[in-house]
Image (cartoon, rainbow, N blue to C red; front, side, top):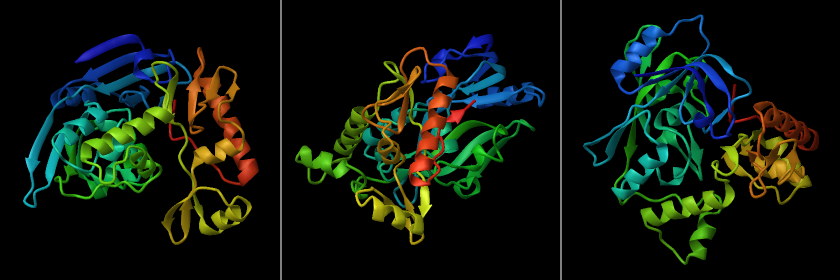
Length: 338
């Protein structure tokens, strides 16, 4: 177990914010997670983090920050030929995707290059290009902080929604993640190539029926083209969630903006890309103070150099106000603001 006092979180958030915490604790085993649970108390503010790729720090954190460094990948085969992959909560998510693709296991490839760790994938319900991790998760193992007991939650108990789970709300700060088990398919399962510009990128490469490896390469290429490298320009990837609106709202807007992209949710709802709304408000590539909007993807807010968390929040709030004023739609951050 690792314990640090007055610890800088600069290397633990991809926005590049140099904030400190009073105490930093990292566990490497389930047993250590149980010990950490016993150490924590209700009077001390608590922040549980992964790689910090979905985190915006606005000030020093006067409490304890806890991080999982549990590694390891274990596989078993189900009776119907699927693969169950149990991953340590501290494993890098894209490393897990790469491992699946290398072994010919399908299901995670559309989630390639999403930053973060395994534990956070189950909290956030990460998603991209028509896929969500909730459709892969079988169960989540975690240590209950109040009791120090190891508990296992089946997928249904987590109540997953769009970038949502009970771990983000009523279970927040109640559990320390230790393992997540995913179900993957064998090589003959169909690939999901219908979402966004995947098909266009495949056509550009003259690929009609991609292999699993080719699809991962295409997803990575698309993401690298749109998203800045946090090591060069601090960011947390997609800063805003795509709003889901009532069909009547969508239809009224579609009459005014016929080219507005949208994605069918159900007969009563449509999803509208937040990046398009922000771009229509003229924010793509613009800067406010030391924070700005990425020039290739309006969904991404960036640290232009020396930005504070407050700078990014001010930009976020200004963008939200402009989108609301122009379209009557409220957008909200996907990023966890502390």
